[in-house]
Structures are given as structure tokens and as C-alpha cells.
Length: 124
Image (tube, rainbow, N blue to C red; front, side):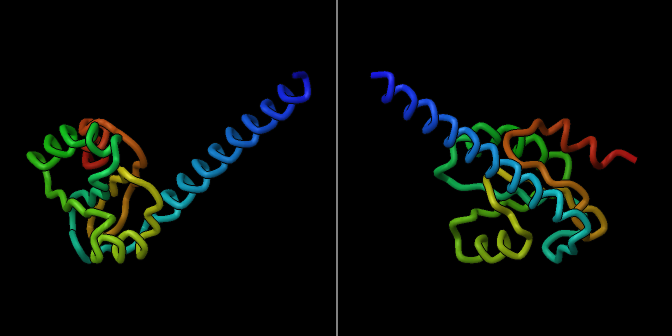
């Protein structure tokens, strides 16, 4: 039994570290997008989502609120065009919200984030 608990402990520790490493990788890729040129939109938000993503469903009311205040391009990462766009910008997870100002990536949010927080990026 003691041997089993040791194995279980190391398995859980490995999984936790793996998830943490993956999250750090995704966030690092998101930071690397800053300054990238975007042709789809001059000023507004690119919202990368998946219909199968639970967090994306939770984000939907925030996206609706955003779309009332500024231009929002919704991009399904499972569509052929969406995959190309996501790959070109380095989007690794959904939901990802990309703030675009003057045709360049200003800020990238990975995960659920409030519309108010995103709108702060457009204040002078």
C-alpha cells in the first residue's frame, strides 16, 4: 500500500507540473503576439473560441457586451479559416481574446475575462 501511495503521489505531482508548464507556455506565446500586424481588423477584438469549449460558453455574455461597444471578430478555431488565423498569430488555447489597435496586437487574454477589463485596453 505504501508503494502505491508513493507512485500515486509522483503521478499527481507530474500531472500538476505538466499542466503548469503548459499554462506557462500558452501565456508566453500570448505575450509574444504583442505588436504582430493584423489585417482582419484595425481597431477591435479578435475572439478565438471553440463550440466544444466550456470556458468559451462562459465567456459568451462578455463577448456580447464587447460587441456592443466595439468591433468583435469571432473566430472558430475548428473552422479551416480559423485554424489558419490562429496558427498565424500563435493562438494556443480557447478562449483567447486579442486586443487590436491600429492594426497591431496590443494585448492578449487567455481564458475567461470580463468585458470591462478588455475595454480598459481601449482607454487613452
